[in-house]
Image 1: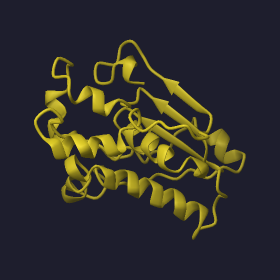
Image 2: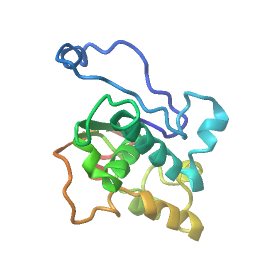
Image 3: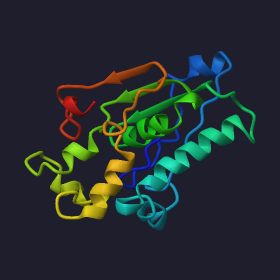
Length: 177
C-alpha cells in the first residue's frame, strides 16, 4: 500500500508477482485514504491529523480479506510498503501483527516522530503538509506518535520482516528503514 502524499498504486502488470500468482497467491492493493486513487478529497482525508485513517483503511482491507471475503486466513497475509507507504504497512502490522505472516518494507519512512522534529533533515519542512509540524503543533506531534512505526514497536510477536534501505534514496535515507 501507499496511502501517502496523494500517490496512486501503480495498477499495472508486474512480472515479479507472476510466480506468486502461479503458486496460488492472491495479490490485493489497499486504496487507503491519503493515496490518490480516488481524487484529491480522498487524499486530504488521509493526511496530517487524519493520517491514522490510512492505517485504519489498510487494516480494514486486511480484515476483509481474512473475514468477509474469506480469501486468506488470519496470519496468511503479507504486508508490503515502499517509501512513505511503509509508514502505513508497518503501522498496520504494529497494531495487528496476528493478521500477517510476513512484511517487506523497501526504503520505508519508519521514524516519523524523530524526523518531523528535526528541521535539519532534507525533507522535514517540505513534509509538514503531509505529516504535520510536530515541533510547533502539539496535536500533530500526538497524532504522529500514535501511528509512527518506530515509536510503537512493542514486545509482541511480529511476522518475519525484510527491511531494505539504499544509500542513494534522497527521499528516505537508509537510517529511516
